[in-house]
Figure 1 (tube, one colour):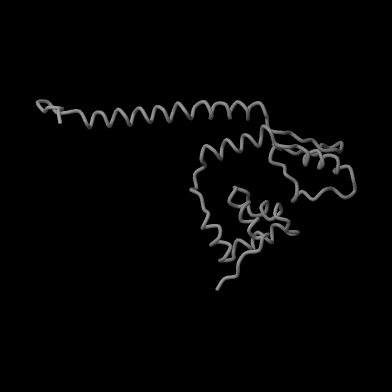
Figure 2 (tube, one colour):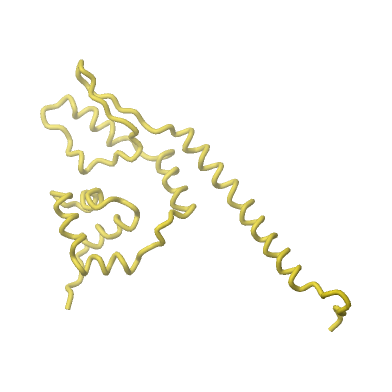
Length: 164
């Protein structure tokens, strides 16, 4: 008999389902040593069963891609700013707990300090617009193609009457 998962373990599983890696999911769930906790949790049969129960198909759906672009376009940069400000202090922030999704590059120049490069928000917005404007046209085209295929299948053969 397997024990039921704690709320913290269920939260970990939720983050894993949302596409976070194990270490990141454990950090967001509040584990003090996220890498070790993720390895331990992912090896447990009850956690694997819980993850399998809510498993999505492996391929990214358009909604997931749009959610990623939305996070890039509108996401907060406060954790990156906190990292920048704490880099000058003796005790920097724990990077395991920071949300750095929108950060494209971190660099520490020779002269000191910290350079942070973010993903381009305007490009993310452009990609969101392209995906959202393309989706209805593709689904409409698929609908019309299916309709045309059905019409061809129901056309009477030569010499047959279409009367009932």
